[in-house]
Image (cartoon, rainbow, N blue to C red; front, side):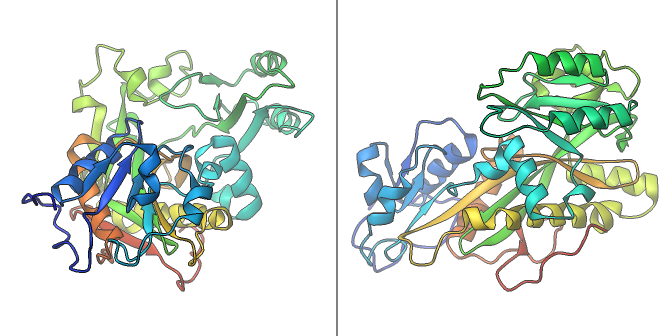
Amino acid sequence: MGTRSSSECDSGPLPEHLDRQPCFFIGESNFSVYEEMSQQLKLLGWCEVRSKGRIPACDMVLGDRFTIPYPLLRCEFLPSTSYYNGTRWLNYFRGSHRLTLKASMARLLREADPTCAEWMPRTYVLGGDQERRKDDRVEFLMDMAENPSNMWIIKVSSGCKGQDILLTRDEVEVEAFLAGLDTKGRKIYVAQKYVQRPLLYHGRKFDVRVWALLKFPYSIYAFTKGSCRTSSRLYDFDNIDDVLIHLTNHCLQETTPDFGKYEAGNELWLEDLGAYLQEVYQKDVLRCSILPQVANIIVRTLLAAQPDLEVLPDEPYRCFQLFGYDIIVDEDLKVLLLEINGSPGIAAKYLAPLVQEMIKLINGGIPLREWDVNAVGFVELWARGDPLPGRNP
């Protein structure tokens, strides 16, 4: 057995029934959360495996999202004396792309949850093979014609880091974009209505990243901490040419000399936002208004995907997955979902504690019952037997 180091990530001693050292497989992706998890598991006495041929013998698989061999693992059972009593944990749910690809998410939520129009900006799917499935271009152009003052963000369904984004309210520009799409191609975009009156932080736009955990048996949690990405520019809706006003992605903001002028790394934390809003509104709007809406969105989206994601009790594996929810708040304190990331980056200051708390939950730890941004841990939002969430406040 490997030497156990003292660590804050302490889930207790290894079970006495083990007949071998527990081991985990880690794939070749560079996602910080699973690299950190591998380091913490090694501190807990686990053995690291890099050979794909040894995956069936592992107690935990920290694999690459699209290469985990689910069919193989469905047929491979571990002995009852293994670390998790004959089962193993996988770090992705098969089918989670239904939520993490923007076009799939929009279609799924429109079909599965009639309340989604209350907490997701209008979204149209564009592109792809038109013979296989017609896109939403007709409806999108009608919407533009009926609401000419609206601005739209067009982005690649699988894109990230602010890549290939078109910000427009010009119908001619959109028609030219649509004309350039390959009608038999595979590249898919979404057009999402821009939130024109966002809540501002000292006059600048921001969005919020919240980390949610889905775990077998189907139960939903949120990490109590969260981060906000801020713009380097004062907000001006009419200035459509300065993309840095409207898009808070770090990879875009760091190109300006003003990056870090107001907040280090153009980033602040939920507790900072809460303190600012307390000062502005003279009440705790983060806890009383914003976080309940965030919780509602997380629960509703993951319940919408439950038929695609749920793992049956007799499967020889269990799944967990961390999601990154990107949300925005408008000036009326209404929370809106922008997108969901299936392999989210974690703010450096929260990486180790988030992973520690995630390991504790996987190993049967007790979650928090209330969302307190000054505490560190996962709060349980929904578990089997709980009622369906109500509508957003």
